[in-house]
Image 1: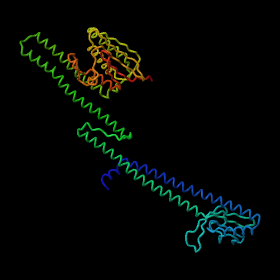
Image 2: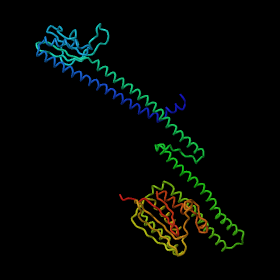
Image 3: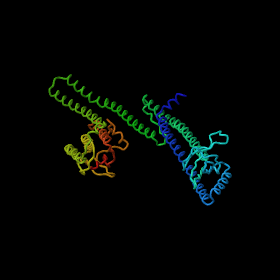
Length: 462
């Protein structure tokens, strides 16, 4: 046996096929026994009906024509029974046979009346003989009548049925083993193909994906889930590489500024006012660095499934109102109109802290990039399909459609916003919070400005 075949015979699929085959075999044997027994009972019932009908007719002959007429009819019928299927015997008062094709009253019958079985040996006494199913009757005046029929035909029919069922069972077992072998071989090929793909991925080729057969079976479902997992994993790894590069690039500049500022102060003449100014600028730079790191940590928390344990019912209208209240002073300072239209009572299940940070980031971006005299509107309302929609619209420069996917990545900033304070993590945080809550994040054109939509599943009352 080849090693591949040996491993195939040890697969779960092949063992499962053999288990089902064993159950089917036991069921088929039980069915075989039931069919054989039912066939025997049916044939014997037909024999009994024939014997009883014939015995009734002979009893009427005895009643009409007495013993002589009965003996004549029995002798005639025995002579016509060339195949030896029927058995007749009329026993006299002295125990000697008076008519029939039996030489003597069977010993198995003795003095019993009713249904009996006995065996008639062939001429010469060689061979198993023929089994007879007979009925013994007592006639008037002490005579006895025995009428029987051979069960040889029943035995042949039963044997033929048993052979047919036996061959059918053997063929079924053979087909089951062969079918289980080839089915397991097919399954093993697909499993081995998946294993090879997994080994290539483990070797560093993250572009590898499971192949779909197009049959939409369990393996295709598993392959689709695996491919989706690999797409997400590749996206996360690419995000880690991008974040690492961006952190190194974006943090190097403020750190260099910090060091240069401190160097200049140390090289210059002692100046308390200059020291104070330098410390204040250094603290501002440190605050920006801390804000960047805090934003990264918040995104990491939002991407962690552990936050699901902190989910609770949240009213988005309350969050929207709190965020608007927080940024009203900044909006007034920039001469930007900040409005809130929120329908209360629209509950969603989520992390209150992360949801507030996401809403606050959207409002902060909208106010930051909206010019003086512009407008920012925050609204919460019911949407189609039982959803709850949170919307932040502004009249700022907006985001070009080609760049809307890119701005959701970490540290990505458009050229037009480079001069504006920020770290490029605001929309990344919103995207991470949306994914954690299963919400749909959409960026659109407000003509002019940016239109941001967050679609949540509404929490139903219980």
